Image 1 (cartoon, rainbow, N blue to C red):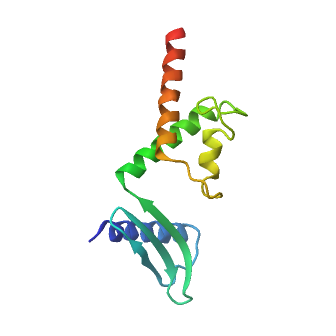
Image 2: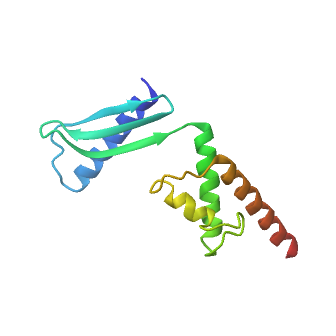
Image 3: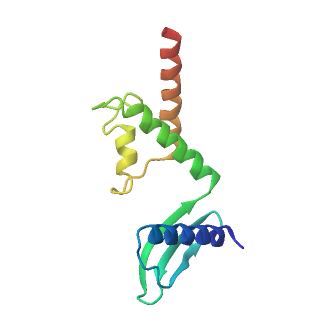
Length: 133
């Protein structure tokens, strides 16, 4: 059984559980793996009779992608307390977090280098504040 098949099985079980808890007829639910690239996949649960997808999910277990997402999340958590018209880390507009949030909406992607640079500056800023205390 592949990782995608295991996740699809668990996903279907959780959807069925929610349906039962809410007294929704589960009918004939089935999973379909829309794509499976090993570390990345998209899975859907659909009603086989109606042919309607009722839930879907994507997962990405790629180590590089997970590290980037972790850094993005830490930057978001750190920067959410401050709303900077000009990014303290990049000295540009929009700030790095707004750029991350808008990445899917606009053509311009945030590079790994930009994330890494801002992440290092954030850590330096945190360390400096800890030393001041």
